[in-house]
Image (cartoon, rainbow, N blue to C red; front, side, top):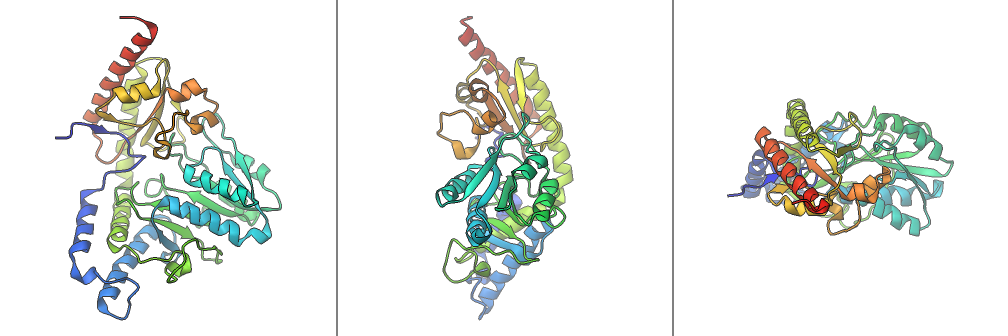
Length: 388
């Protein structure tokens, strides 16, 4: 029996049993085993039909048309397609890109590659709470800027950026605006039209869906040109070749539909649990919250435990599944680059843990987590100070 308490939902959510059941039905139905691109027979058409239904479900979550949704293997591929695709296609207009130091590695690494290819990237520094202000974007824009890429919700500290204000700036200057929305899709209200978003990346495994499937929203009115990265049979409007994984996509669509239907209740419940957790951790003493106190999602809480090394605390909490930073940085001994970008010292950054809650977190889980962290922090501080 698994007695561990899972508080790492920002890294990946457990698949919802309802989603798994829908996927199982898809996998075991002979009618849906055809290639979705084979429209000459009913098996292919049946597979295509459920894929298009899922496309509508994902599109509805962001206020888009289904024709603007391109299936990918996840947010990382979506980010890569958005950045390389837009930069290369529009390079004749300019080679300047604006982003932020606190972006996910799935954005920062492609930007480094683009810099090697002759593009110039301005990395904005957020304020001490992790906010990138619209005036910073405005000051960074030049006549050669073709692309701005900023995440909606930061995966380490949960801070929400003012996407609408930044989107309007970009639209006024005819600059393409890409948003990594892996942590916000289904959790926050998103309307790509009113928020003036041109490209948006999302993924299924952050919303209780399967791993290995994601989507990229690509503005179609007016049409936005992208250079594809994967070539082949011309699937997905020629932007992403490859046979579509019917069951994965069906799971993604249904997971998104469930997120939208249950969002309001889920968010209120998670806010209550997060506040319960924060009150309990504050009682330990000498702790700080990383990020903005109010401009954040309810499911992520990043806390610095001063006087304790984060990795030691993480190892001590064997039955509590939390993280010392983003999953993409696993194996790195360096302090979180996100927290350092906020001005935190290496010591403060290395003493921080991220707690991320989700659909299956209970109030009892939170109480056990508080007790475990309190005990281990006290023990480790005593060891450090030489007390018995």
